Length: 465
Image (cartoon, rainbow, N blue to C red; front, side, top):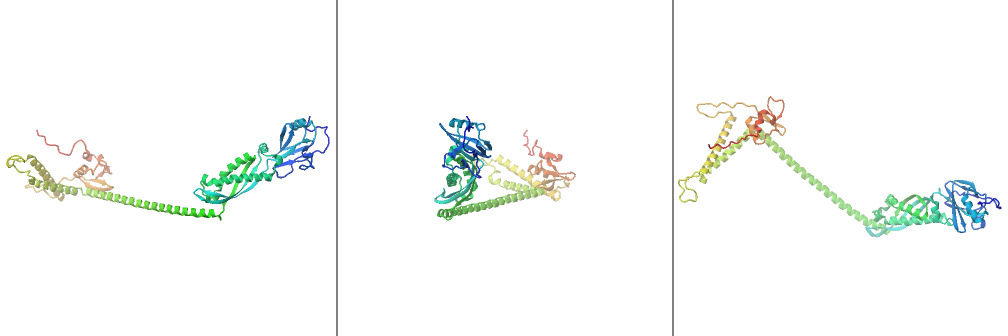
């Protein structure tokens, strides 16, 4: 049995095709037939031709005794309807009508390539800032949605083709968009932390927030694929009381915040300046003290002989004063010990006597050395009866580098004293005539004994036996 039996007779052949330039869903009717006019509205005759353009689908909807069935032929297609090239339809028709004609079926053309653009506008609705919930600001949203049908089987499951109207479909989509956009914009101040008065400048962020929701929900609810969603404007009603009140409150808050921030910045600048001044003063004080100390050390190094003489004189004076106080303490008196019976006659203090002799000896040596140094410095001779003292043997003097400046020259005695005082170390640079360059004191053989650690310069006690 075939779809259109060759023995069937009657009527002209039909050409099943869609000549509409722009459509989404279009129902075909035989030539001369109109909606609800006669029984031929859905009649397809044997030998009719079927033309389906590329990007379109022809959907055949027909009924059998056990329910409705659908078959789809995707374009491009240009054929004569016969059993050989439509085996599925042929078998179904054969079962339903025993090969009779015409074949009763509804034919719908679905345009998969048609891109539908819907301009939407959401009227004013109140949006509240969570910081100022008493002031609702009216906002309106405008934009454009672009979509097309991709999965026609899913689309047919969600919609009745015989009742489909594009204008009604667009209106349904606009209502859905308005609901999703209103919900997203109203919750943006809380979810996206966007102040209400800045919503109109947050188009990109709002678009990224809304577009995924729109795409997912329209695909699920309407069976269409969104290829473009653009919000062109999010506009507040600037003439509304809520907008003016919110702007006034926000302006006051911003002024206070700016003033507070300015005060903090000024205080920070003052603190930084004060700290910089204090640091500079401290740095200058340290630099000044170090410079003075360096100058003092250079002066002492340059006049080490005079400085040593001055110190020796101070020691001599202190010793003389101590010697003069010995008699006042009873150290030289002879008598009995304090606290014993008698009047103290016939006893003296040997410890005090020895201390006095030691101090006297030290004072005498110090004064003798000082006088000898003075005579040597003046180039004179010690007054010895019947003899003359020759002048000291000249010694090669060394210059010492102190703080980058050359001091001296110093003789060996002065260098020894400087080494003992820590003013001359192994690492100190020295030079004397005959040396090619400055060298460390520790590397000069003639000065090596000044830093020897094996012996001591302090005279040990005299052995008793």
